[in-house]
Amino acid sequence: MANMVALIDADFIKYLVVYDVERMYKRGLDPTVELPYNTVVQLIEARVQKIFDQTASMAQEYLFLFSGRTRDNYRALIANVKPYKGTRKYAEKVKNESRYRDIVEEYIAETYHYCKYDDLEADDLCVMGHNPSTFIYSNDKDLRSSPGLHYDIKNEKFFTVSEEEGLMTLMQQTLTGDSVDNIAGLHKCGKVGAAKYTKGLKGEELVQAVLGKFIEADGVKHGLDRFVEMYSLVNLKTSRGDFTQEKYSKFFYQLEELMTEKEDDEF
Image (tube, rainbow, N blue to C red):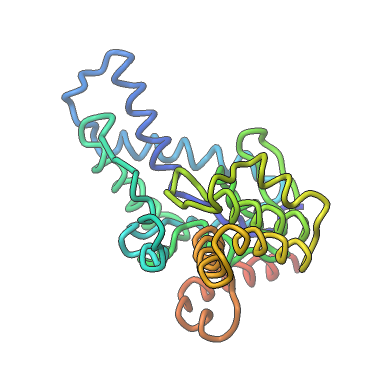
């Protein structure tokens, strides 16, 4: 029965629409021509409708979540070993790409349930709102650290992440870091090493083992500092008390409204 709220990690829709524009140019459209607003909207609606079609069996309401600017993200303030996302270079693939990206967010904000905060990424909001009445729709592997129901975009199916699986993903990410986001992790530790260090471990034992590897590499003080930094960079925001609820009250209000509408429709 479709009775859940879908939390859409919506940044990827911008990339897909730009990809669609690029394909139009490759098929013969003059690449110097700027697409009309209505044409871009048609591309957006096609992508949104695909989300609706894929998740219709579970979703009754949808909340589209977008990321703030990297320089405003709280991770940029705590990154010391390497600048957060410091190696990313943004080059336009098609003319007016930035305008097309803006249209995607502007249109979705005007047409659907939408939320964004300057200091958060869309996946932070996804995790903050992840509960038994919601599921996450995203192609970001980092979100597999959040226990609960997810939608696998690549394989087009729902799957569930357990508490143990979520913690394992988070601890292994703390060890490996993330080259895409310029997060260093433990010195010279890749996926193979992370799997080896965490094999068969759970809960507190798992966390202690990962922390121990940082202390082993850098000593107690520096190892602890590096562990805290890497954990904080890869960890996604969660709802932990009144301060978070108050600071991001708009998001929680929207989510509560959608969940209430869902419950009302059941009766």
